[in-house]
Amino acid sequence: MTIFMQEVKSQKLSISIWSLSIGLLIAMCVLMYPDMKSQMESVNDMFSSMGSFTQAFGMDQLNFGTLLGFYAVEGGNILGIGGAFFAAITAIAVLMKEEKDRTAEFLMTHPVSRTRVITEKLISVFAIILVLNVIVFICSACSVIAIKEEVDWTPIILLHLAYLLMQFEIAGICFGISAFLRKNGLGIGIGIACLMYFLNIVANISEDAKFLKYITPFGYTEGSDIINDAALKTEYLIPGMIIMVIGIIFAYIHYTKKDLQ
Image (cartoon, rainbow, N blue to C red):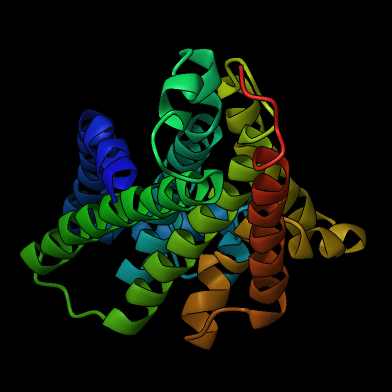
């Protein structure tokens, strides 16, 4: 697992910066909740009357005045956007950088097959994303415990699980694209993450666009659905996992036949 270890080591600084940034931002929001609690009723009424904006972020089905509702909106948006960007950036570069940095020929002179290279790099991407989410969850959980609010932990754990799976899906898509790239694809990765996020907003606003929930991984990360149902929406989750697998398969098929430069 030399390639795996090298990939993980090379991302240590990135993991530290991203995970602590996301985790501490969520923790700061949670720690602010007790001071804002008395004002939450009026905030909740304000948000509930904002029409399409409220629907776009699922706030029409959440009680913003409770810790769970507050956490789903504030923490969910921070982890959703930050985690999606991190997953996309990490995965889009993992195969492409061997050609970009002119290290592909050196790597292939070693007694390792391309299939093994792809597999170890794929595992490293998932491991890096998992580490980020563990650190973020620890920061979030500590902040919830610190404010001594009674809370049902099941929706919180499910919410973090949903965002982890969402990041895996985006990583799978970007990993597949990475196999086709030879130069910097950072913008493509960020663009995919942004596209998926806005597709979910459109799906929330328009009934005619509900089918987009089957395309965007943000469809099964809706805090309102997770908190109200205490479960993930499998009708959106299953297509998402299929899309992830398809992206990974494309990476294997193309990279094993690709002329490396």
